[in-house]
Image (tube, rainbow, N blue to C red; front, side):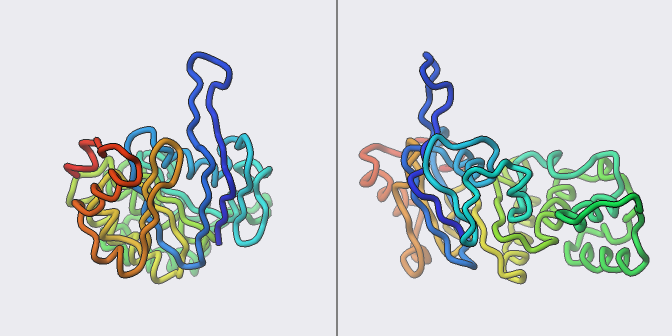
Length: 264
């Protein structure tokens, strides 16, 4: 479903602030893979997701989504393949629009637009049923402005919007990092369920090693713009945080130092 071939990305080239963010990244995801991504600050985790999403052009390499070469496509052209949830719950929804209007925008994504605007009664009932699955009481608040929701409610709504059209690839970029522990656990539970029920392929960046181990069928660790560990199957199921730290030390030749990951 996803192929990254020798992806390089350098920011501020030929300047004192030059930073090689991706350094020959190679990654292949099969349909249905749910991959968690762990690594220290500046390891290249979010940069890799941005390379997939087409936020900016890569220096070199190839990005393939479901057999389609999207390397030279701008971000808006790749949107038909992707769903994405960001770290900030304020992103991903339109604050001054109603819940049902936000869902309608997500539902019409990729469709040709005309002058007619309206949400049918049948569509509204469908939205209510979808919102019930979140178990947050939002199905009774379809006309409420999204700006009135809590951070956790907005993130859950964003997750629903991102998966509404069953994207080829779901990108979760530290999407629980700004939430309190209880709310984060709820959003992770919803993420697991939506990915499984819709048969989605997903990449989830996290700073929390326990979450990286507990979720998904595969775990990769990045350092200095490279993937240095790729663990799946039974080996991943048996992992502990201590195992992961030891593997990082062996693969990178240094200790993993990141308070958010260790204490998360």
